[in-house]
Length: 169
Image (cartoon, rainbow, N blue to C red; front, side, top):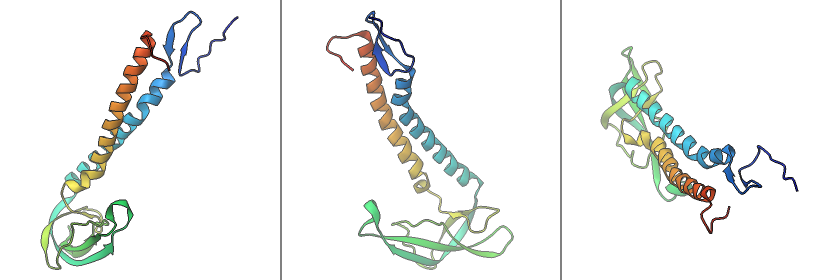
């Protein structure tokens, strides 16, 4: 009996008993960890670029918007969105918000703090700190966990390829 060979396989045992693992399986095993880590690096780099290119200034809180938290993590808590007044590059007084709300941004009107603003866009403001990097770090952490899973899968596949007793795929 002739068994047709195909280049489109994930893993197989050839008629002569050799075990082979196709490149598609390696892509399936490693694509998620690599993409998550790459996305996390891009997000962290983006925030680092924003922190380096935005201009530091002293901002005064002029208003604080308040919302009831919703969703999985914010239910039952309040989030706050402060609006800051600061002097822009042309010397004009400007008001802007970060565009984000935080549970720990319950500032009082009149509070002064360091903010950073984009030198070409008056409404682009951020509060310096690690909270801006949180999304990228979380995505990288997910990629690290997936890398451990992919590494364990790789070890299992390599053990199967060697033909260790008791291993089936």
